[in-house]
Picture 1 (cartoon, rainbow, N blue to C red):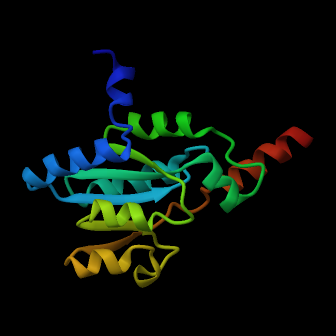
Picture 2 (tube, rainbow, N blue to C red):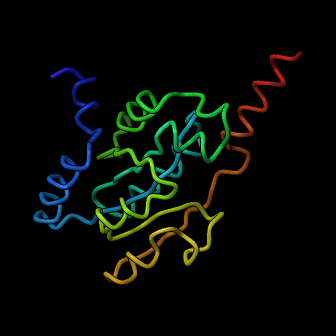
Amino acid sequence: MKNLDRIQKRILNLDELKKALGIWRFQQKKIIFTNGCFDLVHLGHIDYLSQAADLGDVLIVGLNTDASVRRLKGPTRPVVDENARAVLMASLRFVDAVVFFDEPTPYDLIQLVQPDVLVKGKDYKAEEVVGYDVVMIKGGKVETIELVEGYSTSTLIQKIILAEKS
């Protein structure tokens, strides 16, 4: 099997995710979930995702669709389309599955996944993280991870715009 085929197999629809979750639960794997736009992936994203993966056995990334990103970030975003972003996420060795969501929040997806650990950046308080209630009811944990200072997609886009103007 070629590498790109292996990567594509990590991008799951909801039915495929349900099957994978059944297998992982049977194997008693500790399931970690996080989500984001992951537009213009940078060191901050890699650091964040690798730390999230260290919290368990399986890392599932909920990825905003292009339409969802536009609603959140505005008409000029995403810079990178959803399929390319999904392949990039799935190519990271510590990401086990990528699944799209189009809703304003990943709440429904979190209810489906029922993660053992829900992860967001330290720019959130644990109690404010979407899905906090779902995870806490099942006895899981919500973890917030320190972000790498100076790295954000918005900052990166501003640097690109300034570089083009000069």
